[in-house]
Length: 163
Image (spheres, rainbow, N blue to C red):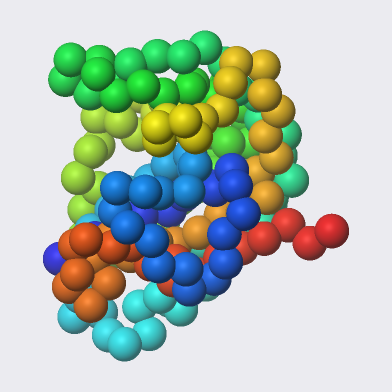
């Protein structure tokens, strides 16, 4: 299976950016999924075409950062929760619907739809703070193991809010 993820970056990134797996730019996970790699060479373009409309509809949504929390088994992963947002929830649900129609799977179904808890994970000193305002202005399809390399991530397609 090919491991992909759709995220909304909260800091600047560029299309094609490659970054270490343990040094992500700050982001909100929209949906993580695995797809059958035999879908062909144009897999990125096919997925991008399927999700283009809901992503473009959500660009520009204003989000508010809420309280800090801990995620993971022992709640040891520090995160900043994103306040409930209808546009963000609708985008998440649309993307999950598209992904469900692909040959593949969502490996964390317990964290989707009604159980979706949008957040921004802290990365050392990089973090969002309660009360911060964030604009949903960069959504990306990211390969979790480009060319089979699990130590890096690559942005495959980037949607940006045009000013």
